[in-house]
Structures are given as C-alpha cells and as structure tokens.
Image (cartoon, rainbow, N blue to C red; front, side, top):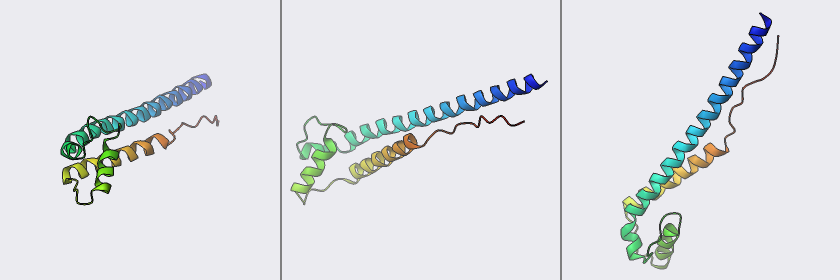
Length: 115
C-alpha cells in the first residue's frame, strides 16, 4: 500500500509539472501572436505617416517607428493620426505584457516527501 501511495504522489507531481510547463508555453505563444498581429496593425495604420515621412519600405521592428518619430521631431507640425497612435500603444502594451510573462518564473510543484 505504501508503494502505491508513493507512485500516486510521483504521478501527481509529474502531472502538475507538465501542466505548469504547458501553461507557461501557451501564455508565451499567445502573447507572441498578439505582438505579431499588432506589428501588422501598426504597419497598416501608420502607412500614411510612413509615406509622408519618406520611410520607404521600413516596417515595425525594422525602423518604421523610429523613422516616424524622427520625422515628427524634425517637423513639429506633423501630426500622427489617432489610429496610428492607438496601434502603437497597443503594440507597446502587448510587448510589455510579453516581457512580464517571460520574466515570471514558472511554478514548480513541491517535491517534499512528508509521511
């Protein structure tokens, strides 16, 4: 009976460990997908700003946001559209939440063997 109890405890710990790893992987994958979608949204929402600023073929992650902000700094009358600002804010928020999720340690089940 004692060996059955130990085996049951080991199986329980293993299942808890697998579930915590799966949950962490899912959380990371879902935030990565959100950031990827947000990059596309910024590229689309900021296309007129990119054209005005002569950013060429630059995209998010490859200089687009820096290009737009540099143009804005050099031309104070230049206005970034509400849609572009909103898309950039969403990208920033999702990127921060992804970094927070990645820095959180995954929970590990207790492996103490109390009798």
